[in-house]
Length: 351
Image 1 (cartoon, rainbow, N blue to C red):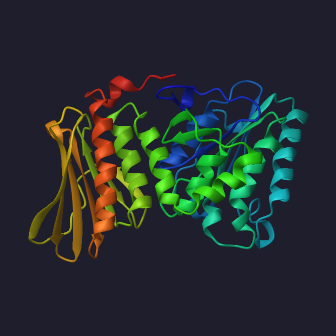
Image 2 (image 1 turned 60 degrees about the horizontal axis):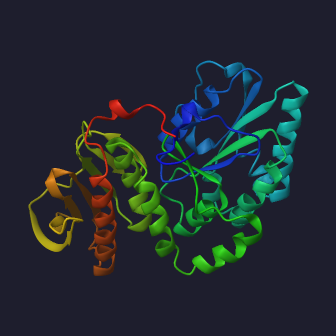
């Protein structure tokens, strides 16, 4: 899988595939899971390990439901109240054995990973477990997508996931992961980068940002990824080519298109930074504003390409604003490479 990736509905997994979904949100993870599992063909089984905290989200599969086996993370990852890597390795070997016993040549699997946020005994093994799982899955007729779609995951864990999975899912698009580190090198690389996980994540974030082919996908990615770098209560992204803004309510992790979330009250604005484009002219500007109890930081881009607004209670520090300026400059460069057209023209798989 090269370039701008491939839509998950058109992705044909191979035995031993191990993928990680990051910088997305619970609803989009559920949607991607359904697309992936519904793609199971003749002779394929499907396994979905669902987190009970997401019971309110849709999990219905149309078609191929007869092949689905559903589990709860409470009974699998956190059986008896704790996480154990060896028990999980046995779980995946057992699923492969069951599928083969039913004459299924391959099993597609989704594992929702919000259990790792619960700080139960053993959850600190999550990073080492994911790295070791590559070796366990390699000989098995099983492909697994581990879904970390939540802005509540700390940068340290997201970094570990990006280093330990050969392929990455963002929204509903699958990418090869050039940042993957094989198991024998994983621990030392993670230890080296963990001193500054945010700094280590920026070039990885930039790589995938530049590979998203539509304004809608880029906007969702920005809404879901920016709170990892900068704690906020809301993110609003409006990019040229979108029918409407993408709005993330960070407290509920709800991302939708609609009227931007904006605190009421009079505002004053102050210019914080400008940055050049590749042509040398102003590529964008960053302003801060006070609106009632909220502070906002707004990045706007040249030629009306769009804007990003972060809202938080309390002031943004100069260090945070400098980081947002650097990230926004990367966004401006990525936007310059986007075709400025509606998403409906770009829904075909790209490989």
